[in-house]
Length: 178
Image (cartoon, rainbow, N blue to C red; front, side):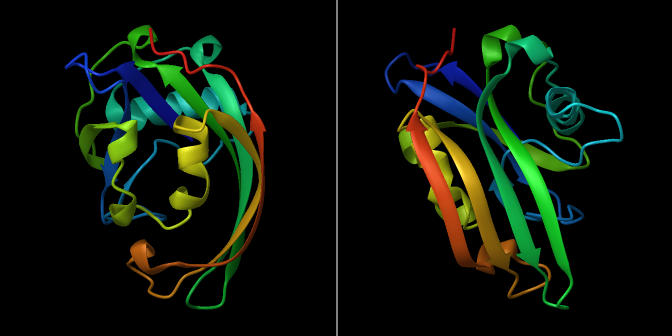
């Protein structure tokens, strides 16, 4: 999972984060605003996966050395069908100034929007983001833990139910946006 960050273009609202609007065909998070990221390929590091997925989903290109690790969460999903899946994710931030390319619609992300960190549209995102993202981006902490999610509708992740979570937050570095 990757969050590009930049200084607000108006020079007044502080730091902004880039979010993508996921296409209906996405396996997780369809038709919601969210982060960039996806499945790790065989023999691919989490860092390289994050860079590849950011490029595929936004046409923004980055180098692994520019990413800052800010957390690791294991997601346990129970689908409406009863099938279960587990996904281990590492969470990174990256200064947009170290990237090349510009946010461009793709088949996976239909739109891209910069949001001031105090105006992130959590009501249009999968429910788990509210548990950890403010602490990472605004609270300037790192996170480790797990979240258990139960799908309540197969095509609408906005309705997912958080059945339990165990998250540990620690103080971290200052966000780099230069």
